[in-house]
Length: 127
Image (cartoon, rainbow, N blue to C red):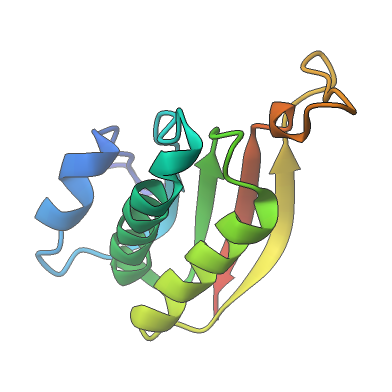
């Protein structure tokens, strides 16, 4: 490990829960695959997003940052934020949004298809 730190690249579904051996991190980036293909999958996907973010909040050290994404167009930004907020609350962590991320302009959003605004991200600081 260098003096500047180290990084771990792992499967988001397997590594968070398995890594709770007291390790704390300053930065966690969650970028899971698309979890919602159809509207009837939204409830199941929100549970998965909450579980992933809950594990991440438990692994962050004080002052740590979570950068969390959803690329599911059928899950709107407001619901995604509520899911992440619920995860922070369940983890007993006070956190604040310090940035919002969206898809680049080369992925335009159709006015007639709001779900084409598929990529959403939050930069969160644990207080």
